[in-house]
Image (tube, rainbow, N blue to C red; front, top):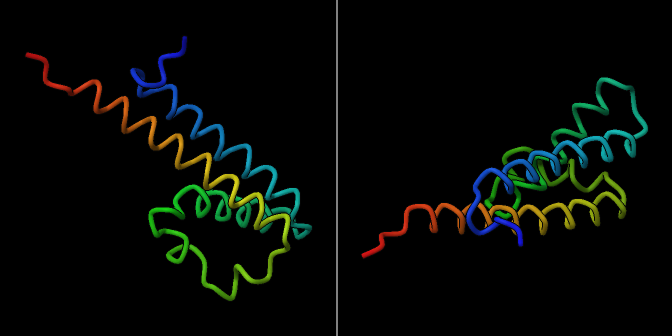
Length: 102
């Protein structure tokens, strides 16, 4: 059995790994200059993970998001779903850690 409901660090490590993996995927999918593609990939990955919390519009304007292709939007949605699951597991672990037991 895994400790995802009990451990806070496992979902945090997976969340960071998810950020780095999609950062790399987005950076390679954007065929631009190397430095700008790396920065744009990081922005896309961070906005995807933080998107359900309303941070996507803080990082990107609507017109900027419209320029990306369908595969990037699909991957952003997938990363958002995985991020929500991992944030839920972090919250569950924190709840279990600070639960009052009588």
